[in-house]
Image (cartoon, rainbow, N blue to C red; front, side, top):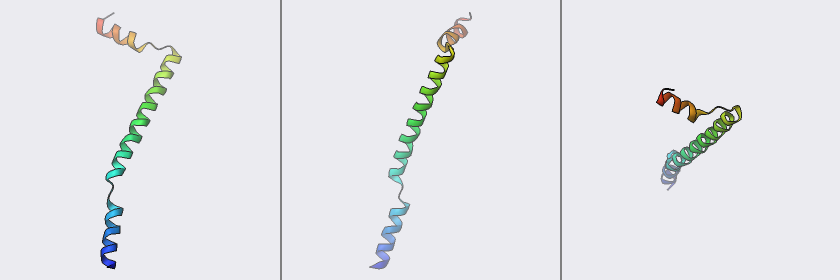
Length: 60
């Protein structure tokens, strides 16, 4: 009986299927937070990114 319990406990420790989902959600949340901070900083500095892109595309 004890070897079966040890094998079961080892399988539980090595199974990280749910951890992958949690890691992806955490990374997505950090990416969104970073984008919001960058966007806010650019707005505070008065940088008009859309106008710059438009000028580069049109050639003005």
